[in-house]
Amino acid sequence: MKLLVFAHKPPPHHGQSLMVQALLDALGSDARVAADASAEQTIKCFHVDSRVSDSLEDVGQARAGKVFSLLKHCLHAIWCRFRDGVTDFYYVPAFPRRAPVYRDWIALGLCRPFFRQIIFHWHAVGLAEWLATEARPWERWISRWIYRRPDLSLVLRPFNRADAEAVGSRRIEIVPNGIPDPCPAFEHDVLPRRLARAHARKKLLAGESLTEDERSRAGGDPHVFRVLFLSLCHRGKGLFDTLDAVALANEKLRTSPFRIELVIAGSFWNDAERREFAQRIGQPDLNRGGPLVDYHGFVSGPAKHRLLLESDCLCFPTKMAESFGLVLVEGMAYGLP
Image 1: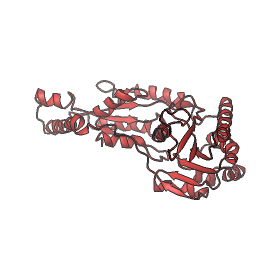
Image 2 (image 1 turned 90 degrees about the vertical axis):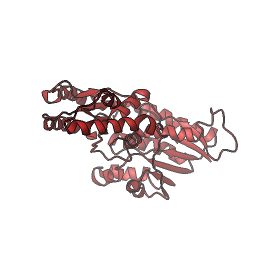
Image 3 (image 1 turned 135 degrees about the horizontal axis):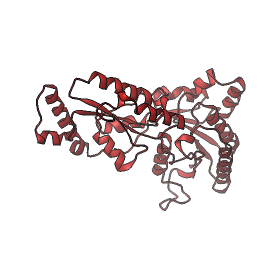
Image 4 (image 1 turned 45 degrees about the horizontal axis):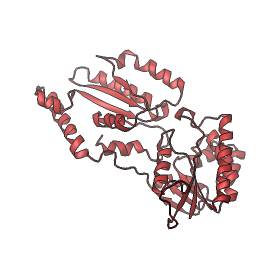
């Protein structure tokens, strides 16, 4: 099988692009450049990196330059069809907004006629509902023709079948997302610290003092309960609700020995919300006894590991239609409530 993977890998970094990278790694990368490619491979992968957004802020936004980039990617895919004999086309349908859906119209409208089998990997959810409730009649008609009857649809969980069923998929398979264990040394490196902090807080609640050794094993600050918000910084992800909740919780804890601090890691969706965020964290209810919010921007690698290690819980109060949520897997791997 020769598979044309028409999807973008990082950057920008988000769940979909990371899973595309994982797919490419599992398939041995692009057969045209992979050093270990062999004739015996069951699936030979040919990758067209269809990235049209330069950053997370640019994802889903309409921009003329994106059309030219997309046309170039489509020509590349069609060229692979004839030059390399690639017959199967892998594609990640858009999330339900007009600009991304129109992108799908262009890409699938140009490429589908040249390929024998079409495979959709549904990383976003809500297209079926959008077509039924928000799309204009002519948008609904074009979309149903463009997305019609893929040979295979891959969905991340049973709840996500609705979109695949709405386009008449010939076959639907459930393949949950997965990542390599980000914290393989949990029992040795992380669990003792978690237990020590729990023990120290129990003593503080009982009005007992801590020894220097107990305080050190608990990270030095067991009186601070650190909440981690690790996601796209966007109202729809619950960012501002989290800020309000931390302010309210600290008000209720005013007479206790504890305080709650919020650690935020992620890029902002737009400048307006970035400015609103800066204004909100400067207000008095988020600065009692010092700043209660610590913003780190986008993090990865050792910096991300440190935040997950040092936090006491993960807060992910999203209001968006989440297809899976890789951050939940990461939080569980680090033993975070």
